[in-house]
Image 1: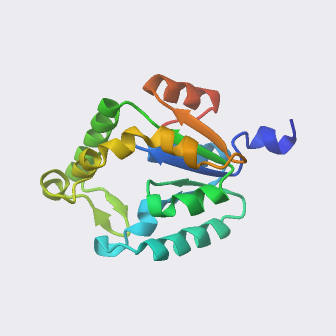
Image 2: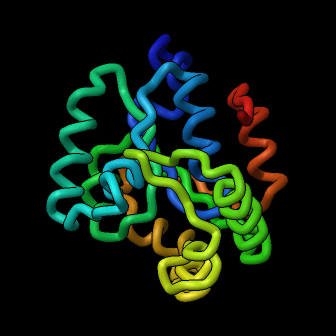
Amino acid sequence: MSTEDEKYPLGRRITVNGKGGKTTLSKALAKRFALEFIEQDAIRHQANWVELTNDEHRVAALERFKTAPNGWISDGNYSALREAVVAESDTVIVLALPWRVMVWRTFKRTFWRGISRKELWNGNRENLFLTFFTRNSVLYDLWHRRERYRSFAETAIADTPTNVRLVIIRTARELDDFYEEHGLARE
């Protein structure tokens, strides 16, 4: 094993997809391996929740990758962006957690961010009413796209090129083991 492999066992360009912990995992990986964290939601959602188009998002994301010469961790579930991001990746990590785990973790995170009014990106904050009682809700999105989220692992297996390492995490225990194996800390 080379020194590079020892220092970066997952490579220096890592994509994290899924639901129920992808941003926390991405931040932990970025911190542990001193790689730039590129949150796709922060690129997609500009100030006042104005969304970039798929093409604008793809161009902006690929540009961010170029400006991270030491490597990057990217998280996001944008299907229109997936092929371009995976093509740039050394490793794709998919959180394919059980549905109930995804829903519970998403609910807790979203509720807390709505109560705390914590800034997410570009001045945007979650609003409890919008979050829970409209079609713009992340929980509505989770329900509406439940089959897509349930099939993340199978989609990743089918769509990830053979030259890209694929790690699928299917349980909370496997996720804990992954954190331990790579010396990661949740924040």
